Amino acid sequence: MTIDERANTDGNAIEDLMPPGTRVVDGRLVLGGRYASELADTFDTPALIIDEAALRARARRYADGLRSRWPNSRVVWASKSLPCTAIYRIMGAEGLGVDVAGGGELVMALAGGVDPARLVLHGNAKTDTELTMALEAGVGTIVIDNLDDVARLERLATREQGVLIRVIPDVETATHDAIATGHQNSKFGLSIPEARTLIDRLRGSARLRLDGLHAHIGSQILDVEPFARAVEAIATLGSFDVYDLGGGLGARYTYDDHPPSIEAYLDTLTDAARAFLPASARLLIEPGRSMIAETGVTIYRVVSVKRGASRTFVAVDGGMGDNLEVSLYGQRFEATMADRVGGGDDYTVVGRHCESGDQLIDSVPLVEPAVGDVLAVAVTGAYCLTMANNYNGALRPPIVLVKDGEARLALRRESYDDLLRRDA
Ligand SMILES: Cc1ncc(COP(=O)(O)O)c(C=O)c1O
View 1: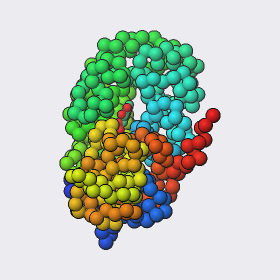
View 2: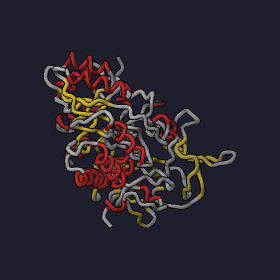
View 3: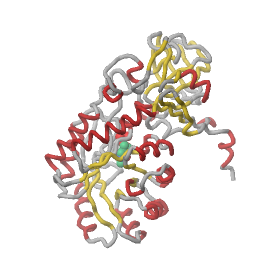
View 4: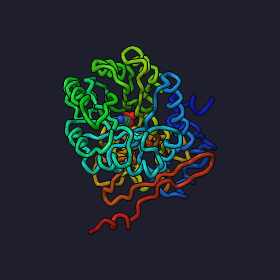
């Protein structure tokens, strides 16, 4: 079985949730050819370990899969899922375009050597400064979210600029409210009637070249059908050269999650495109979570094991400072002791931050967790580093890339000096 084929397995062992290529040797977790507990010794904890081979394989699986179904197309990685210069470099080198939301992601994409022509700039509140940065950098596509974007761009652009209009397709999705974006009254994009009016207006614009439409209906979507409905909805706005169908495919966080495969998702999108969009259209897609999540594992060290009234707490040296997915969306994660993989009794894994809500996993089987042991939490590649913060002066974790038995630091851990550096 190749790495590609192993992704999205339905297996119920913790290593089935780890990056493809993960092994268990003598009960010890091996990520990218390195013992997880040795990575903890080398790079300290908490640390986000990204399996580079798994990431590259996934990028290729997406790119080849889309190209083979719809040759006039490009995969544009949604970089909000793991904004780190080294990851931009990898995705750019794999030939992907990159979606950047705002000036910070733009700076990292450029530092990572991504061709500006392949960048797609998003944001529902893009400032003059950010738009100027994008125009000066030569960003290929700017996605218009609102009429203020149009006013700003018409004022700031000095030459022709390709734009898409972000459309609210009015499609409900069964995901957490905080990450649903395709419904009426979403803060992102314009309704279909508003988009229709703007299309007419942009056709007369001197500098803004309307290439097409964009729709993104939300994240962690575990059913393909809403994606097809979104395509059908935006098709009612007429024929365009480009359709950017956003991201949103869910990742497999738990044994009970069974997200559609990348191939099933691409089949759905391209079948819908064949049914509703012009055959000559260029298709873009913007996967983030489904590209990155399953390639990452966070390692922590156990700091305390404490028996509560009805459960036993395993407190680790991270928490909501490096993983807000739990407290923001109620996302469930799975974990294992790095050197005693699988099975065990149920424990509650909590973080080190001053909130009772700082609970990483409500109840998870672990084998004899003890102070100093390494705990590995699976499927933390996407949106964890993104939302990492300094709550209680926590230092944001490093990113370590592992591949073929080699481990290299891609982003160093924040230092206490970093915390003081911005003092004015
Ligand atoms: C415009 C846009 N495109 C793509 C994505 C990526 O979504 P996901 O990470 O769920 O694939 C997002 C994230 O919400 C987004 O806002």
